[in-house]
Length: 116
Length: 109
Image 1: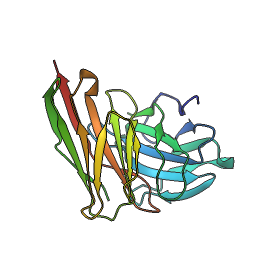
Image 2: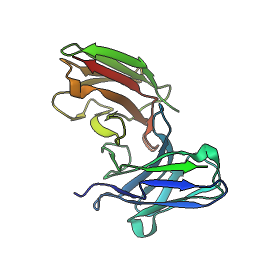
Image 3: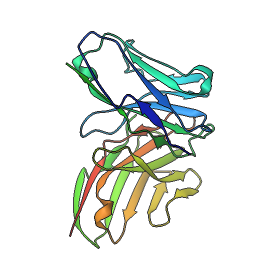
Image 4: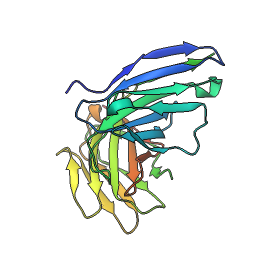
């Protein structure tokens, strides 16, 4: 168990640029989640996958955000035309679960995005 | 829909006890509890499932009232290492985990 790995740890970008983050889950985990966290707030759900299928995407999430999990292994989160309001910590988590949520989430250390 | 946690913050002296509450307006299948220290990722503490099953650490206890859609986390004989922000997360049967805003716990000597 090497843990959930996220890359990069930090990203500074100018407004309007596109950015892509990568998450490598724990190898035997079939579920993968993306959350966003700003200072003093709880993790905000963005989207999640079971294997390669994207099960749900937050309705509050702009169309500028897209995520993929090809072959059910690693995942990427892309933000197009970044805005200053996108500045946050982006957390990835994985679990081994079936329907109903009886497995704990294991979080990566996150990617901190700063949009200038 | 985001669960509501209370209190927002609490300060304890070592050895004191605390209770953190979490409530939801939606029917729940499970409640998760996580602790996050400054600059670190959230770490799993406990899961409470509809029907009474619990999974988690031995030194932490929690309750889950299914009828009221409420959960409470009990921290007893607090230690300095208990300091951090505690989040509850709630799930319906086929819906993803949604977290509350957190309860900031500070334990002082």
